[in-house]
Amino acid sequence: MVKGKLLVGPILAILGGVIMVISAYFVYASIAITEAGLVTAGLSWQDVGFNPMLFYVRVACTALWGLLGIIGAILGFKGKKIGGILAILGGILGIIGMIVPIGTITIVLSVPVSLSSSFVFVEPSLMLIGGILGLILKE
Image (cartoon, rainbow, N blue to C red; front, side, top):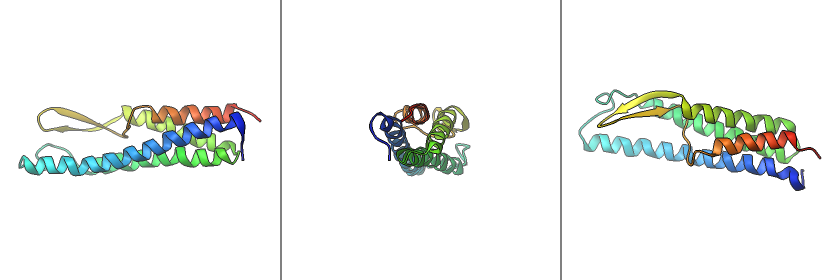
């Protein structure tokens, strides 16, 4: 178990990972909300030219990268350096995933859909910083 200033990295990583997993849940809920809006308007996914499976890819990627941060933080709490690497990997993938578009929904406006979601746009950065601090800070 790590103590003192060594806890900063794993705490940031677990905070970022938990927020990112919560964000994956909100993406999953947005699928139902979007579906209800389409049904209300008398449209289907094919009418707007979007495959709903891309939303499930977004949920899976967001949850996976959040879990990488959580697992990395747990390993970081145990003093293992691989935990910092996993948190860095989850943070980098989360940041890249927010930038990479995988499709566009066009109902009234064109709304791009990225590979991963972010709740407050900082949780991948928290995982990245936490992983770096976990690797840099020594006993």
